[in-house]
Image (cartoon, rainbow, N blue to C red):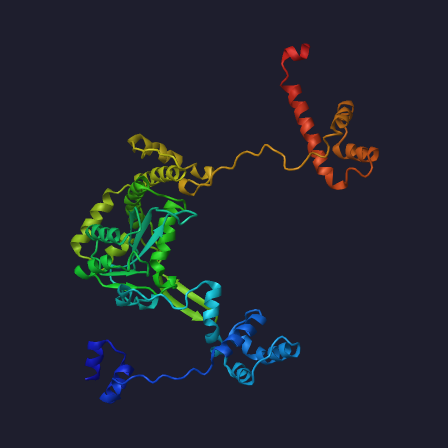
Length: 469
């Protein structure tokens, strides 16, 4: 009977036992209120002492109170009534923190009470990283990646990432704005394109997932929903890893906004979906053993998500044949060329250019293939990760210490061009003692080297008319 009562009401087992053991007449009675032990005078005295202690916490303030009260009374800064003094010195550390809570909240500008958890979030059960035992293809983690750049102000594009825990199959959808209705529409689209049914939907506690629209969609289509613990990113370790290795690796960290950026991201994810899932092997953890302070991890052999689905017994033979037919027709080089082309377009959009999407031509593929052998010589090939080139520095940050004396030094060089810079610098120090310290030798040598270079260049590249003159 107790088990059935707990299952129907949702009460905790101990709470149900207390309800059964409480007489009916007492259950509906009024709660007895207790008179406050510490009045406003004690509270005001604690606030003054807290300020005098430089606002330390209650655990540090408790042992300090006897010393602090005696010192303040000895110097005539404080005069406490006997009752107030007893109350202040007898308060525990927790009581001191409780008495100071409204004062601290007003000082820091924070609310005293925590915000209530939404009803939708309370109805979704929590799933941690340790609760994935033997997931089937279709149990997916989801997360939203923002492309706001260095600022979160305004409206910008987001990426909805879904990762299958069993196989690592990753799907990405570009969202123009962060909205629950768009998340539900993306789920409807993905359910028709994924090679397995959506058996689970595990998300974080963001408002784009914890809302009535997404909750109603999952409830209507029978999709179990779970959520991670707040501030525990490891509960979604699989999708967080794909956020970095897929989304950030392809798109980068620049700001993307508007329909043009969302359209470009959709085209990028259409190509990367096939390239990542069919041609990008990934590791999967097999076991983890702790030996003292060390953790020894063992991984399975790297496999692509496509190969993992073919080896899975829960995938139907018909679906496996369809995957094989798709894999035979895929050209990885063409997919990579499409990804690079869209990355250049995204880099131009993030820089403020309003360029049109590049159209792919058949002749570009051969040139792209020839460029793979020497692409490493040009550094970063992904335009979304290239740094903006710095302007050429053509100005001085310090005044030239040899500007006044350089005509004299130049006359020495023209008279004796074989003299080295150190000898000329010693001569200059002898004629102007105390003006040029030894630390300026390298600067002087650079000036001499520049003069020799200019003189040699004039000698080599001088025109015949100049020689005759």
